[in-house]
Length: 310
Length: 283
Image 1 (cartoon, chains in turn green, brown):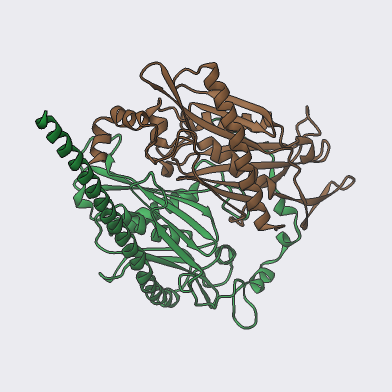
Image 2 (cartoon, rainbow over the protein chains, first blue to last red):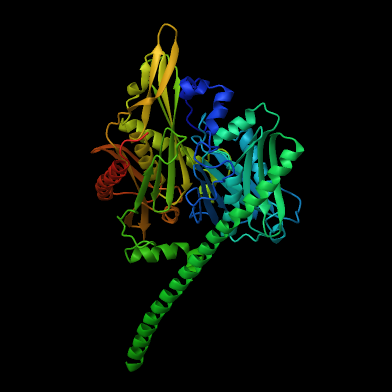
């Protein structure tokens, strides 16, 4: 890891102990066989075409995670854990020209302990920068940027545990956090990803499946992430890593469109719960204020009568 | 209405609460916030803990690596703690390299752990001069609402208590290393260091008030440098007192603070032990 003199550094030659374990030396075929058993079920018990957002215990999302941020969200796709916070619009630093549309500053960061294979460095590496750019491309069509010209909104993502589908989870979390922060948006944005290895399609891949898809030598291999604005029926972003032929890509796109639609009711439910909670809180506070004002008024009347009586 | 008042007259707003001997969230001056603790939630880390002190949330993850010990200390392993304050925890921090405050907190936490001697680096050495464990502890703050050091230390100690070191076989002739992830040994921890943060408020130029476990708003009202006084205890022995700004303390205030810190250590110990009992032995 490059030396960062603002933090404490370990010895430069430290290596992860995992390279000395027995399962590190498995061949590609062994690892591929490991992924799914004879019944076609994957390692974590799902079907090949079952996304983690489907079952109730697999996807968990909530807003209001960070009390210090204007809007925030936390999304958990079984093991992948992502926190997002959104802050108020602020002036764009280091800029001279006037921009008609507001900017979105997106930053994706991995926690140092989030990846199973090695420890992540603190300095943003290429993968984090690529994810930040992809996130920004996905969110820009969804946000009404003409409402905050010449300002920028910070969307900050922190990935606590990486078990595949990080970009998809990040886009879902960012969409929720933006809605929680009352940033005007055109539609709810949802996202899903697929890993392709040969003729098999793994929907919502885990980290091992993604790793094998990236390093596979088959004809069709790779990962596709797609984010969709469901009501407007528009695809806001499409990212592909790897090589696939055209039929494979079109098949995957159809599957992804359906999957992204399925997530929408969950997101809507969470946002409605959020709004209802805020309304109840407001009602409760107003009732309390009324009570206190009445007590104060009574006291004021008492004193006034005392004063006048004197 | 009170939010407008808070913005326009921040000092008067704060003073009004202090004058009637209460704080904004209704606590007494010496009351702590509730602590919620969970361990082993992050499976990619070798040990992890999540702590919530009120709104302040800190996630600690430990990653183990192997390295050759330093030439001048051949029988000592490495313990590297780092506190990270990403931009998402508060609007005070911008994305980029760690701010000055983050580096200060980093230093404070590292000093507390070193001075408390809770981990003996000799336990981390596998073969002297050849192989030793490097324990990377990363504490990430997800939500910064005051008392950062308290939460970091609780998360760190909870993860230490659940850390299991895999057994390593080192062949001295072939210099071959084999790691067995199924056989694990517990890391030996001496004591249980706990830190308590205070904010020191000067009420009307003479009267000093100690606010235990301050929130972000209270820390800002008392100087804006974070908690003013941090006292760390390890099983009845003081392992660190840091004072950063805020009002000046008399000797009585000092003694009172030390007494409150001792009480707090007992409470935190109960929380950590209760959490670990619930989890039992774990992988």
